[in-house]
Length: 145
Image 1 (tube, rainbow, N blue to C red):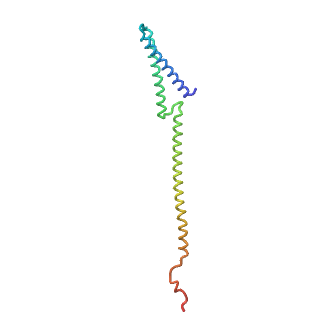
Image 2 (tube, one colour):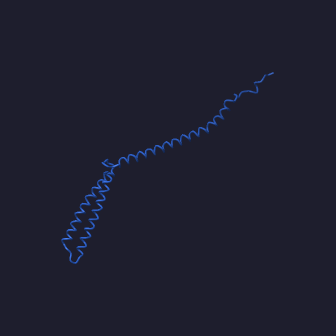
Image 3 (cartoon, rainbow, N blue to C red):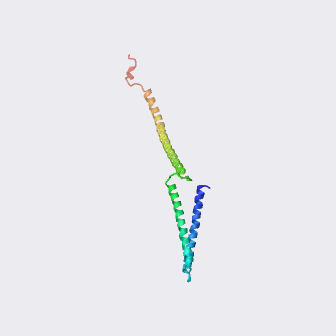
């Protein structure tokens, strides 16, 4: 049987013991409330109550100790908590990497858009620089005569 099923069965057993405990307490109180109560029966029910209560307390303590181990992340037999925590952290790292890549992609696109805007402006300015004649006495360069 698997560990989780054993834990569930142990909790079911504890629940049944609690019911027995409450029934014993109720029967002891009913016996004591009678006009002619039997002290022997009341003591027997009280003894059953205390014995069952002690058993419930020890079994619940075991369950609490188990849950304490699980919640601290310490690896132990039958627990998938550590693996689940590792998986959750891996998903978190993956999401962080995705957001970082998306941010870098956005920055790259912004940079490329800026270059695309500047390139036509530079190309428009470039022919003016390349096609411009040196300014000198162009008017006086003609034949004199």
